[in-house]
Picture (spheres, helix red, strand yellow):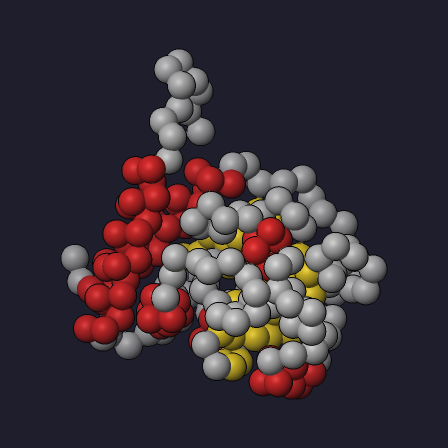
Length: 212
C-alpha cells in the first residue's frame, strides 16, 4: 500500500468511527435560502486558505467571509463555509435559522475520490469523529468569535494537532494531491493511533444487541 493510499485509509477509518458515534442521519432539515446539497462541498484545497483552515461562501459573498476569517473576530456573512478537516463543515445559514447556534448548521461528510456525501447535518446534535458534540464545543467560544473555535477562543481542546489537521487537508481524496510528505505521513500515523484508541475505549454493545 502506498503512503497516499494509507492516508486515505486513515481518513476513511476516522469517518467510519464517526458513523458509529453519531448513528443514523437526521431527518431532513428546512430548506435554506441558498441550496445546500452534496455538490455544495468540494476538494478542500479549492476553497480559500486562511491561516490553518479553509473558507468558502455558498451565497456568493466570499470576500465577506474571508474578511472576517482574516480578522479573527466578527460575525460571518450568510453562506459562509468553514472547514478545518475535509469531513467536518459548518455553514452560516440565513438570519433567524437558529438563535442558539447563531444560525450555524453543522455537517459531517462521507468523502471519496469522486464525491462528497452529506452523512448527517443538524444544529445541536451532530458529533465529530472523536465523539465530541459540535455545538457543545463551539458554544463555548468567547463573545465576538461567532461560535468559531481556535486555540484561544474558549472552546474545549480537541485531540488533533495542527500537523494532523494539515495532513488531512493535504490528503483530501477529492483533490489531486502530490505525494504525501514524511511529516504528513507521521502526523496521519499519530491520528490513526488516536482513532484506534478511541475505538477500543468505546463501550461494547450488550450481548444480543443488534449491530449498527
